Image (cartoon, rainbow, N blue to C red; front, side, top):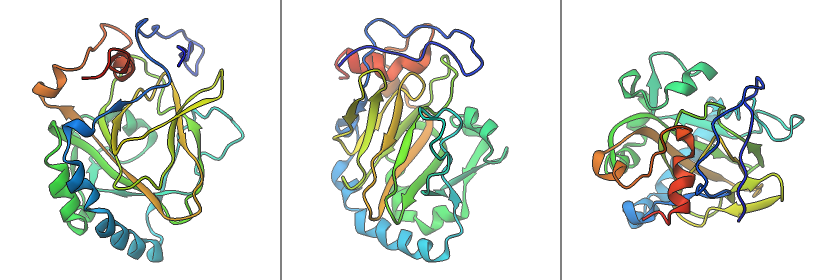
Length: 242
């Protein structure tokens, strides 16, 4: 694995360099910190409820944002989202910078529909949660490589989850083309200094993301840098993430 990072923001301004021990491409495997068996047990439960929603096709389409590796790729590639929490500021791009502002987020009506999942999410190592959503696609279309935002000092504390391995999700080194596929049921990763995406599958695929504030016991494990805080997951990965 090599080291690389995005050296400029979209407006051309320089961003802080990640710490030298930050590892790219990388992710932190969080399976040791969650109840993996309980998560896996929700697979059929989620499939059943998502298949019912597919028939209605009312959920918002997933938006990659403007930070695509290939500017010709679609920014709404096909997956849809079930919001398990809503922000008082809405779901526009500007709200993306408030994903972990837990005072803004409240459970949605959909949270009741996915009550067993919500019960599981309550066991995760968060002091409080912000945005919570399910991203799903009945056709398993490709999600092109993208970054989530360009604020190098904004580190979203989140856990990415999946009940199965049907979604080939990866971190990408654009210089070498190397793809590092997530091999765990849960992960945390740098969404600013590296691109990430998903390969096509042709069938139903889904994942879950929960943003918020990690609890203090969990945060003490994380080597947050003084600047360029978005690199914290990559720094933790480079340190062996334990």
